[in-house]
View 1 (cartoon, rainbow, N blue to C red):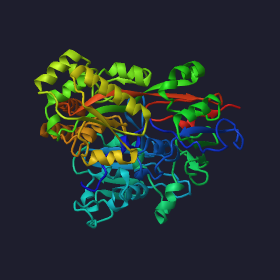
View 2: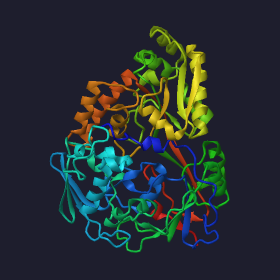
View 3: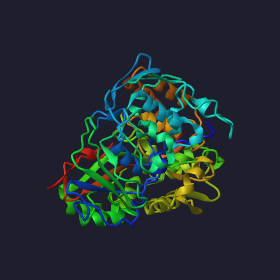
View 4: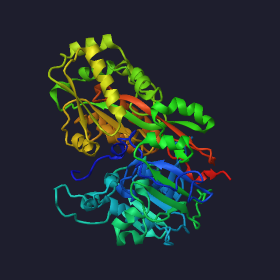
Length: 534
């Protein structure tokens, strides 16, 4: 799959980053001038797209979750799918899936939501010439290759996935190339949202004023770098009935500016309080400060195709020379969790400390292992993007620790523009350790392990046994049966350490005095349930 941009979820959230354009004029939060009494505002970074198949940006997804109704949502207590637009999702062999759509649903323009609405959206996403970010999610659907030719520039043989069959207006049959037990939970991702017929008349226009099927609808076009205004969809008949008249997504250039506005009650909800302000926010906001375990992980990847990093012993030595706890305290104000596993705690199958000594700070053992591996020659380049100041801060700490604990003195920083960072990693242009990040799409070990360590990974790491275990896990008869196999694959990846886990993000949010009934979990902020105080 040469023409598919693999995994943009972490790209989009090369995140910690910047929140929105300071150019956000009036009409902001909690009852400000020009606002209806029952509207509230959410601080946001400028999205890249608002077409579900075209974006995996966390900023875009925040808006899409309000204006689209996916087939399922994730129960934050169990991590299992709960039906939304779908009435049922069933299979007898994990390969051929039957999706029943709840009848009577409508798009914001009045069109009915049908099985064809999902098939049309998925076909458009999987069609290579569209160049949509979530294309690769459909690579396991029969017929994908016909829409995505191997040869660069070749014309696709088809524009529709042969594995999608609209049986009747409320039934969609999906045939996969191989059994995949995680399929139902994957459908919670916004990239699988439906699209109305009207969207395909002008996809460019649709991107700035999408027509969804969710509890909120756009109120005018997306005002770039300023505002995305929504209003309650009066004909919405699903379980997420809005308790407000609408949401104003205010776009900021920095989270610092957004935090200042939150303090002044000029914006009502900020889901990413800067780490430097967390202590103050806890005291200032009290019960209105919300800390939530997140699904985002930071890693240090190694270019194993570079012979200097070819030995697992060297990679483990570097991992053991890093004081994760010290960096979390110094850079992130203690708000992140140092990790000794490849997946975060909220993912089924998580095992605390499974990485063992390879992820524990032990300078003496790290130096011993480093010397046994033959040490390191030449310049050690550390790669990260310029998307957020904290990236350079923790890389500086890593550099200091590698010098102090391993004796590596020739270390240089390679700070890459955020727009070019993914391309650099994808093309294997990095010749040293680099910041890698993953934002959870759905709570499954597969979402991390296959996406980050599987075929086409950034490290250039290949392990046949790992790949076979992933395939066996994917083909397991149930999600529960897949867990032990994913864990075996995780053990292999830890043993060879082509990428070292660093820390798990803990999401720090806060809200103003103007709103209540705010519930935030690892999957959403449940914007439909928020009410505005009278």
